[in-house]
Image (cartoon, rainbow, N blue to C red; front, side):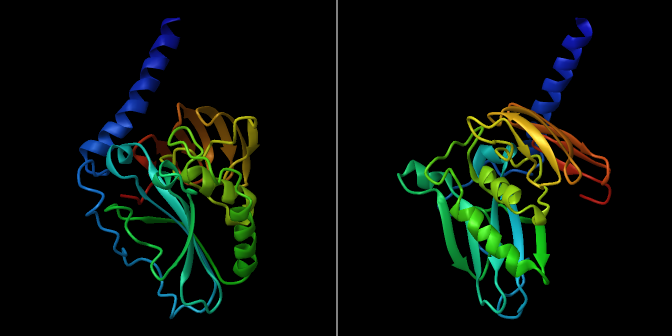
Length: 251
């Protein structure tokens, strides 16, 4: 019994320590005003006017305010062949709170805009042969997203639930979302097992708040209260709540 208690205390410490570290080290910006926070391009997306081939990118950036110590906000950008702008798909919570559909589709030459001050990262990029057909499947998945008028910050469905849903619907993406994408493991209120977001394995999940995932792309992940602990043996990476993915060669 003492061993079990110690394991629970260690697990709780790890779950809490990650977000605390993220807050104290500046990984998340806990201050600022959303009305004046930057939405400028981070300068990391290819210029659509110069890139003629089709392109798919998945982005993520720290959520605004205190939520940034725990989670990222993710979105999907696609550009068809010869298109001079990207089409961006994302779910935005404040739209739901104001009685609007949280699922947004917009065209923009800059899919890499800061998320209210937070610089985005590119989690996935697919270009070239076969990507045009992949975009067709992404658009079909967006149209079939089952929570277009539902949003819950925790444990989902939220912005990361949406991105993970598209990943499962288009397994060719092999989408590996970071452990800070809280909501990615939400499978629904009546579905408790299914493919992982990358489509390379499977997971069981209780309302996105408790679960286990095993996949070639993601590795092994344990979900406790929506926070993810995991290991990716192929990339020698640790996955920690609040901090994200730690692997050799990453800063």
